Length: 63
Image (cartoon, rainbow, N blue to C red):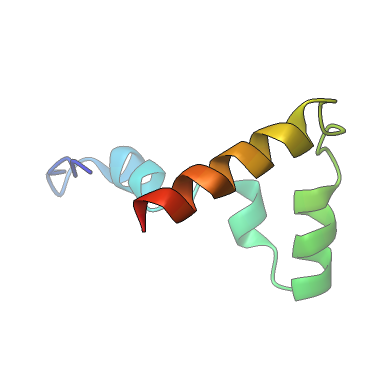
């Protein structure tokens, strides 16, 4: 990961680097944060289970 150096005069750039512009990171309540994060997750594709199975086999072979 490459971190950009921000001069003192660049508060907007620094705030984006540290996520200050992210609405989810301003939620103080854990349950509300979880609801916010899970609200717009699309349904899994039909082939998702097969892809997970293939990936777990590959991960086991590498380990």
